[in-house]
Length: 142
Image (cartoon, rainbow, N blue to C red; front, top):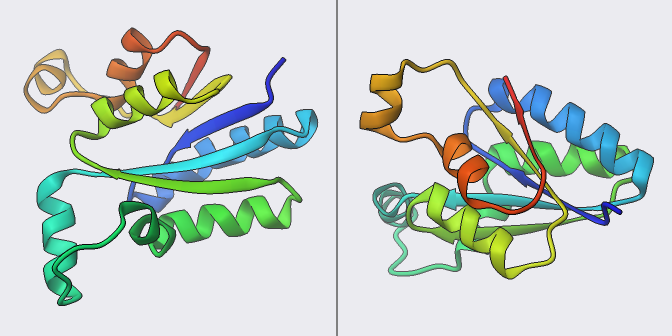
């Protein structure tokens, strides 16, 4: 039974639209709770803090102010889907994987993009890391 769905939210709002549409439809049909999860890499988080003249901040609070997360929250709210927001700093793939392993998540939705094997090797792939390392069903949406 799927009770809790995690959506890995990235900053590209256009790439997130189909991910959000599929996850919302599933969550709505199952009355599942959704976790909107946004992980900042360390450099991006530091830049964000500097731009807001902050020495430190809670990653979840910062994620709740992220434009893509806000848009996703609005979509879920409009669909009547219960949700929460979680944020983290560090390697996005590692952080998302760790969150799934330490919380009661039943299904993961993340966006995917076309990359060559060389690009995946050099740049990494959050979706690939999630598929390999989590023990729950995953949906990758392009």
